[in-house]
Image (cartoon, rainbow, N blue to C red; front, side):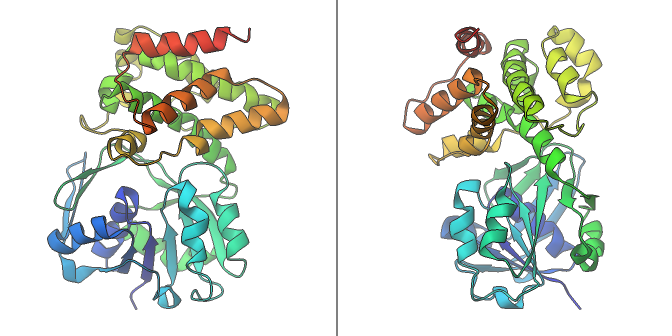
Length: 341
């Protein structure tokens, strides 16, 4: 019998993950905004990746809906909305979803699963992290531009779905406790605002030492507050997080030779925050840098670098858009850091 999957949040991540599950044979319904649903209803889905994968999914192989009215028939619900929309999107499921349904959060930030669990206390709510980047191209094409896996909080409720995820090429990496992974992914996602302000693709941005120096400042500040809060992030990079933050600042040639795999991303891949700014949407900055500021407040450490990044992103959201060179952005963050020393 086919697994019935509902994807709440038909953005790049939701459409790529749900689309791959549909290719593998799941019965998938995408719930989202008419703009995106109209596009895929007209063109179907095409799912590509930097490893050469290329799957096409005609329109009769998936369902679309603007409201989750059929969630009662779903075996698995994937929540892939932006963090700010989590509570509102999940409230739409109340009174419709079956008790015991597995609900998997595939979202950035820390604590979205807690929000979902409070609203759906009778469901099996699990945290998850998408460890790769997906780029939307016109005509229903969604391209995985970086390497990565789906990391999830382990639970017996996942057992019926392990096979379909593996067939989809998205084998779940399961952890007894996902929080260290979420904090480690948050460290990596601190590059999202830097990439968005740079106006450059990820590979080009990360190849520039000044942008990496910006990321190093941001991560070191985050690691300091995590350390004081006794949070130990998982190791997701070739080196432990603290060592990686230090070595981001090496000259470009050394970085390419030693950490070339970090630059092994699609030439056109950008952060989701860059896409949000381009489309005039509110970003997830409060769930990235804002998490570090909140933690810093809790443990009594200032976080001026992350605060400055929030200010720059909010200004861009409000129409003050500009492209920052690496040197210009580094000077902004360096000055913020020096202001409290």
